[in-house]
Image 1 (cartoon, rainbow, N blue to C red):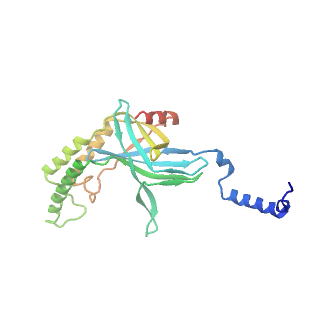
Image 2: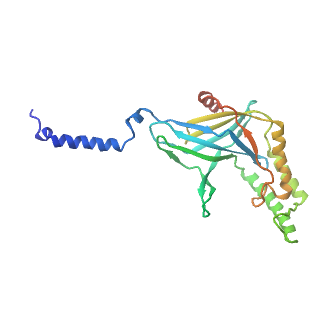
Image 3: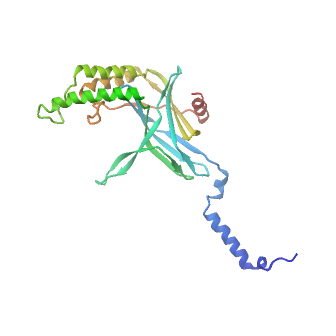
Length: 268
């Protein structure tokens, strides 16, 4: 069978080679084709713990990097503390904070919900994240009742005098007792050895797990409990009343191996 004339043309083969070159230029490097999908997850050495009327809140920075050859997406960051005696405190990540410029040309932090984050090969993503459990409907209703009562108590005293930001007023003792009772019913942190597990997920698929041992000492518990002493002022209870004491700083120990972290997370 004779070879078609167009296949003998040098211009045809030049055009064919050019088409291949254009296609390859729009594709990831050939080396990436064989690297598959892989992301790494690391957590800052320091984390900060507080609580909302006893329900723990944990804040730390995550550093996520796509070291694979394909784009990677994640939709969830799971987080929990597991005590050496088996108790688990769930602290799922609901949102993250990232620095954004404001009108004064300085940086401020804006809160974003975690929906879908996509990373191309070689890209990294880091942000401050906060883990906490949401209240059930009954607790949410009771909590709002307590906050409203405390706010009304304090506000009633403010309007009677020439109020300044430097002046503090106590809520009624009966309402403070309600807040303390709620706190005592929900504060479950105890001293001991824990492991912090953080998992990066795409829907139900686990992409990466990091695990860090930490120790919560007796003085840590005392400090967390002391935050509730300021409820009578509205501090740590009402959004417009600044917290008088900072959150507790905890130091994470050397991370577990990736294999041990994955096994520990799967055994939850």
